[in-house]
Every structure is written in structure tokens, then in C-alpha cells.
Image (cartoon, rainbow, N blue to C red; front, side, top):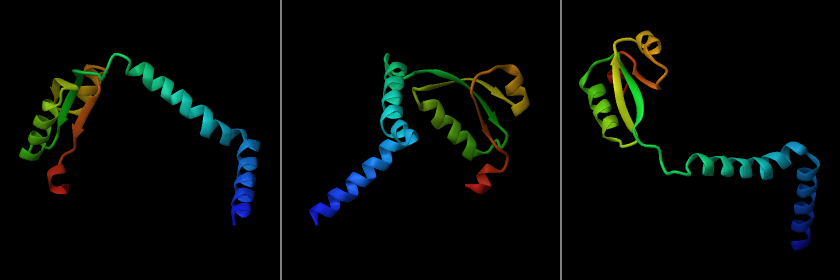
Length: 106
């Protein structure tokens, strides 16, 4: 039984190491991703990221969602916009849009 397992494992290793894409996905990419995340979060978690809000539904559900979003320390709502086009024109900040009739879909 153990010989069969070793034989299958050896066959799979040969398949993995004969394909450059498998080697990249299993060994190179994880190391690169760990390195990048370490560099990005070197100073800790980001705080007070400026965002804009477009509330097209304007119901109690979306207002509650926006209040909960404001409670996070990671984001800071800088502006509120009437339309998505206005938000795009105003700045390049990330914008969160609540579509109209979202409260009926929840």
C-alpha cells in the first residue's frame, strides 16, 4: 500500500516539476505575494481611507449601512454625492454606491 502511495506521489511530482506554470503557481507566486503583503502592511493596517458615498436609494436601510460603515476606523467618509457620475467627476477617491431599490432586494 505504501509503495503505491509513493509511486503516485512520485508521478505527481514529475508532472508538477515538468510544467513551468505549476512551479510558478506553487512556489514562486506564494513567495512573491507574501513579500508584497509584508511591504504593503509594514506600517500596520491602513486607517482613515477617504471614500465617497452615493446613496441612490436613500432609505433607512442604506442610511443604517452608511452609519455602520462610518463606524469603521479604516474608512473616513469625505463626501456624499447625488449621482455616480457626479462622484466620478468630483474625484478619484474610492466611491461606494447603494443602488436604488436595494432595500427591497435585501
